[in-house]
Length: 101
Image 1 (cartoon, rainbow, N blue to C red):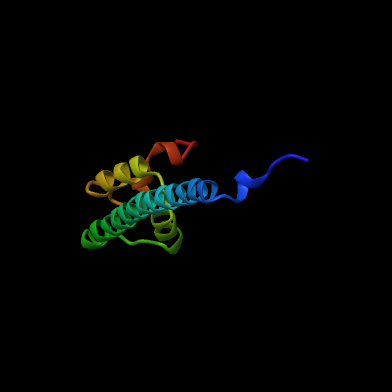
Image 2: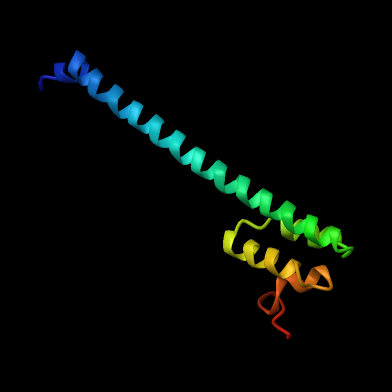
């Protein structure tokens, strides 16, 4: 029979605990990064809605949902820039969202 004493030794437990601690730290770092990205996306969506609202442009429920659920940072940045010049809320989405154009 094989000697399994190493697997229950203090050294073995220390190695496992180091791995668990590293995993927790990595998970926290990933969670913080995701939280920051979500916060930026939410802020950008709010900025788009504020710009459109300040300009008196009507925002439908579907348009509001599309803006607030966008997770592509570069795309939402483009929408924010377009919101400054658009005459309708739909114009912020550009030609890439309207293949018939």
